[in-house]
Length: 206
Ligand code: UP5
Ligand code: MG
View 1 (cartoon, rainbow, N blue to C red):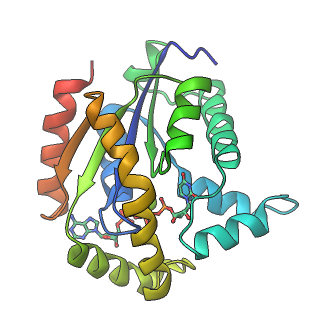
View 2 (cartoon, rainbow, N blue to C red):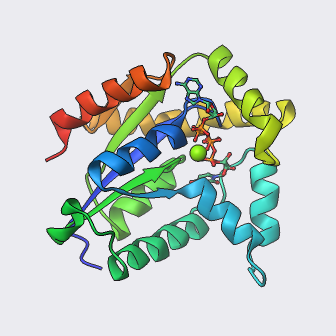
């Protein structure tokens, strides 16, 4: 696909379930015509795909709260982006011929960020959801009752916290230094958070 004609917004937030990335992305898709790609969802789908050579590897990394090697995730994203260009959504944003993507839960490690910039698109914006550990634990444990996710439990969550602090926060700092990151407080209710998201994005999106 045409790499110049593409807007990408990365959506990042704390260690696992809790910052409501997925929830906010669904709202943004409705209002702005983004195609939403969740790196975690793509990895879970690949893990469950019959015949995938990466299934066991992905399962182990996710359970341990570790970042799956970047080649796997970038390949899945690239495929999904190509697919969106082949079957674009029928909305104003895409009619202009420009692709618009929300990439949720990625990049979580510096090597992914640098590789995405190099092989896919540069100067993506980052929407960073910030909140306390307490809020996050409460939300993930709420979701755990119904999510069926192998990493929605206290043990995996602890590991995801460590990975977030040590591995993913430097990525957020990197984009902040480049003036490409906006921070939103994800502690209030979904509506309040979303109002703030729209405000900060309006200033950055064209
Ligand atoms: N909720 C949300 N917002 C709320 C609000 N404002 N008020 C009250 N409740 C709110 O939300 C979680 C829960 O909170 C929901 O029940 C919601 O109702 C409530 P959700 O929108 O699901 O949160 P989200 O941030 O999307 O959480 P998610 O679990 O998807 O984030 P993670 O970042 O942990 O998970 P992800 O799927 O991105 O990654 C999982 C694993 O995949 C990683 O740990 C890693 O092992 C692997 N991975 C990679 O290796 N590489 C990648 O690039 C990406 C992932
Ligand atoms: Mg999610």
